[in-house]
Image (cartoon, rainbow, N blue to C red; front, side):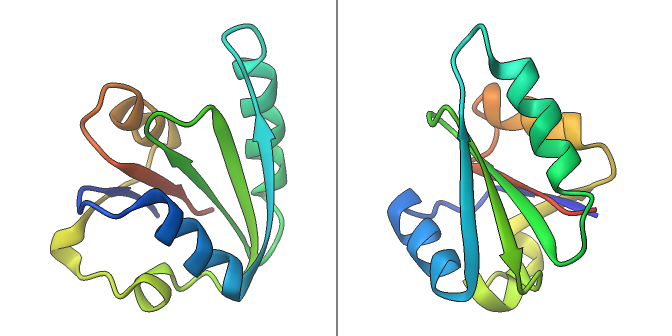
Length: 106
């Protein structure tokens, strides 16, 4: 179940908190390489103990390996995000500015 984060969280704090508990890798993209990087991103997320992060105004897909309990790691509550089944909905919500970030969890 994917999560569209609606709570305002500082991007630096978000990344640093996750990096304390998980191994992080990122895929930087531009307008020409976004689709290719997205395909790599989705493929990488289909391994166990892995989740992805996509943030507003950052041209990167983040891949985290480790604890997938994001609610616990970030002290999130149900009202801080919206669940969805379609990862494209997460990416679109972030790109359109309707969300601060989105977590892709397969």
